[in-house]
Amino acid sequence: MPSDAPVISLNEVVKSFDGRTVLTGVTFDVNAGETMVVMGGSGCGKSTLLRMIVGSFRPDSGAIRLWGDDVTRMDEAELNHVRLKFGILFQSGALFQSMTIAENVALPLQEHTQLDQATIDIMVKIKLELVGLREHADKYPAQISGGMKKRAGLARALALDPKILFYDEPSAGLDPVTSAEIDQLMVDLTKKIGVTSVVVTHEMDSAFTIADRMVMLDKGRVLAVEDRQWFERVRDSEEEFDHDHALIRQFLRGDALGPITERKLGTNYAEDLLGEEAVPRMAPRPSVAPTRNA
Image 1 (cartoon, rainbow, N blue to C red):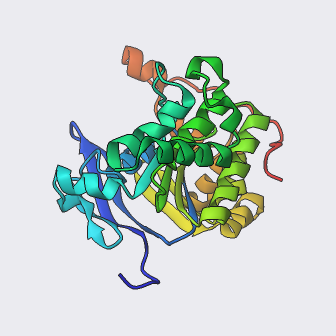
Image 2 (tube, one colour):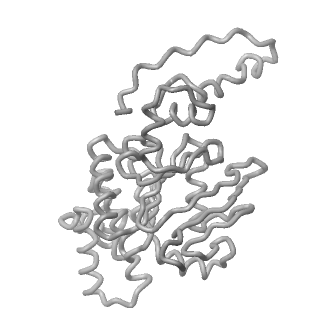
Image 3 (cartoon, one colour):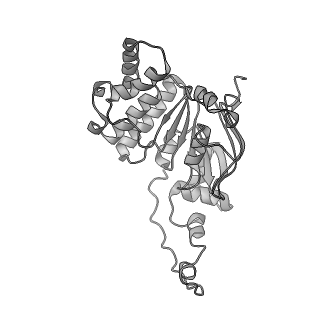
């Protein structure tokens, strides 16, 4: 594969469930060593997209290539070989509760390598040191905080020295300080080990901290794939935008008024519920001034 070729490439990916289209013609690339943030509102298809990239779901049409190979055409054995090259940080951490933190991190090494236990123990200490948990190696998941569970899950994702890291809502359920610590850890890891990262999130503070480039999804379609600075300009601009750009700006700012909320008000609840003629709707209240757009 050419050195400048994208590590991940999606081309016209379509996915439906029970006749409901979740993703429509999704196309974008992820380059080696960059952090790509995939963002959008709840239900926009972010997690489905992530699951298809890692091979848990297959698209109805389109191609998903990792290192030039189309994973949509691979059988399970071929997929498992590719999966050894990437790590996943699940939203909950997904640690085994009956195993210590060290045992959780050691598990991929025991399952997928021929290393002796002494070498595995050293590798586990290295991975835990990377995420600041070496002194907590003998604790169980129930004995550590939510943020520490995320870091332990990240150490396990790093166990096999992956080329790509996938993060599913890494800041979900964390307080602002812990969330900021996770963000900084992700940035530091990218610099130290040069891993390519794909981060699914709707936390804008986190997104603007870690992203090199960002892709915005809405109802399964791609609205924009641009660098972080482009999204910052859209967020901070007061000029008149077309519908898609106005939608992006509302999402980035967290405004209560805009095309997203107008779409939600597009159907009349009383008419839908009772079959009555449309009744006047109360105008939505303006939002407070956003505090997270600096």
